[in-house]
Length: 257
Image 1 (cartoon, rainbow, N blue to C red):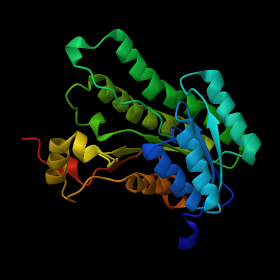
Image 2 (image 1 turned 45 degrees about the vertical axis):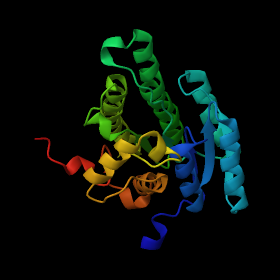
Image 3 (image 1 turned 180 degrees about the vertical axis):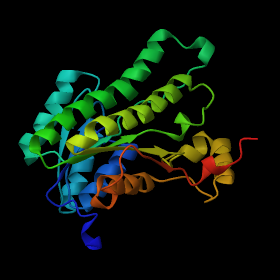
Image 4 (image 1 turned 120 degrees about the vertical axis):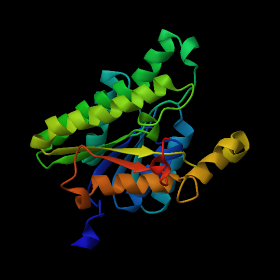
């Protein structure tokens, strides 16, 4: 029934990088939909614990788990802990990543490698571990990777970030192709500029440019991205895999010339 399509009661969801920003909003939205949420973090322990406390206060179920998602053994621990806590793993949201800037001509090899490890290797390791668990359970599963509109529309001083997110999009399609026959769907969400506390003060000209360029006239919110993730992980998207859902207020509809 339509009323049940976005019901995640009885399902376990891992949200990586859920101690702040987008991850926090995504974790909260899945909890509101009835899911048992694993709030992953690496450095933001206080933020992750705050998310868990908020979910529990609202009557939901959640646990905070620390892991370095660039390291195979720690990713395997994250998945194993999720299953030991809640009995299964049904959805993975690959949200963790970094967003530093560096001019192309000054970018070091170490900066490039760090970006790829945080934004692309982590997606592979988490997808691999989660998919193995989902396949073993024999009840299917869904994986949603957080990419970016910069995967298709490059930004200055972001060659390494843009490349990492473009890699996430192709990885999503490749994973969807291989894992679909095994019952696991894999999709991506590409957000535009998302509001955060202080962004108008830190980047006023950029915020104004984005609002002017977006047909919907505003920045995105974590809830906008969370809703897209909820849809792609739900039964409402049961015949969707390998897709990239752009959540940008329409910015990419603008003419390039």
